[in-house]
Image (cartoon, rainbow, N blue to C red; front, side, top):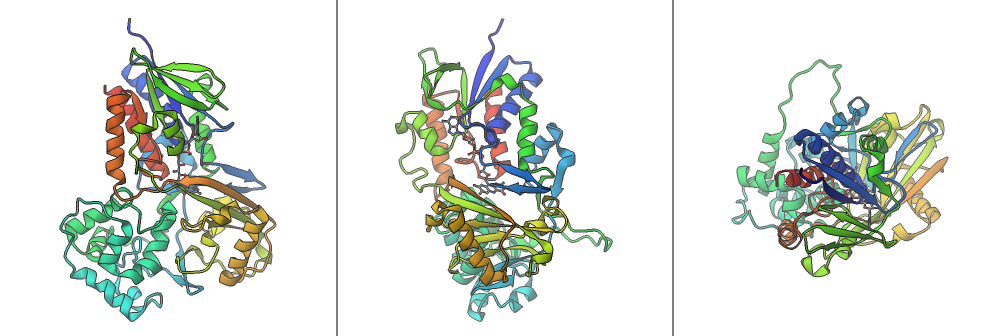
Length: 468
Ligand code: FAD
């Protein structure tokens, strides 16, 4: 009779929970004798995901939604019975702050790349020089060595010029990674643009061609948003994943301290309290700095994740609708780096996600914490709130104080994918395969920071265990 294999999963964020789900699923489907134990150091599951539900509000402290076109997350939601809870965002005009004025993002700008002539020609966001420079994209040759990784900034600056990058592309793209666009790896963050240049040479032409053709629909049919979340918040997804797993296999408040390979090829995971668990396989989903400490640091490439992850804070604010003097006719705004504001973006949450806010109320959520100015994240709640309100007064004319607010700090939460990231991941995984076979690295430090990327990373790790 074959022996039951034991998989230890370190970390109970979205990656760890998804890994546990797939271990259980594939064990059932293949009839293999595999069991798991998930170890989470804090007292709650979810990691960066945390929803507050109070007085009819659904407030996300960390992530608030995911990209719908990355379907692995929706598939997992279906598997845990949450399909009916999914909601899309309301679409609407998004803005960009430049020279302390909100400018509508020109219609047809796809991740900042213009695809429609008229809105681009008439937007006051760019000078004549900036617009003319961007048009060079139509004639510039493609890069001769497109397989070589370069920074996102370098790539877009060459094709569209500094002005379009600094005023539109940088605020739109760097927000996702809370990073510096001139250091971010193009291959690991936006590989679709590498393909677009390879195929069409011009980004403007390529992005235009890649847009789905508009099928004429009845006027009443509303355009669906590109993002999805859950009616009761992302924490309801965490709860559904937890409920799908046997309780006795999930241990919170247990901090892993080290992982050691034994002579027989199995592993021993030592906890902070001195207890030890034996494993045949280990799936590691902890933040990179923690992961490095669990193993021999020499296994990790010296320059990998050289830049510390960025810390950010979100500030969610509840207002009374009849007391607010500002008009919210869009979904929010992002901010060009040159602006002297504390906030980096603001989502008009009650407009974008109506399910989050009770009738008669308004919910706004702002971000603070730039990659090159981290100080504010460590200020007190009151200081952060006052800086945010000061910005909102100047930008939107908000003079009211919120009835209630939540400041959520996420320290060292955004891994920075620098140029060469993909190669480092490959090198590291190669080393692990050789030195620590059966130990798999998954989650935000490696395969993309988006929630679906994390789910996919977990799924791939588990698949590799079951195909061996
Ligand atoms: P984590 O959530 O960090 O989980 C790792 C877990 O490991 C934690 O629970 C931690 O407590 C645990 N741990 C640490 N050390 C140990 C140890 N020694 N032993 C055991 N356990 C340990 N993505 C989107 O797709 N959409 C968004 O809207 C979005 N917005 C974001 C907003 C913010 C403010 C932030 C910070 C991120 C956002 N992201 C978003 C990214 C996304 O939230 C993360 O990349 C993702 O949640 C990471 O999941 P994870 O499981 O890999 O890591």
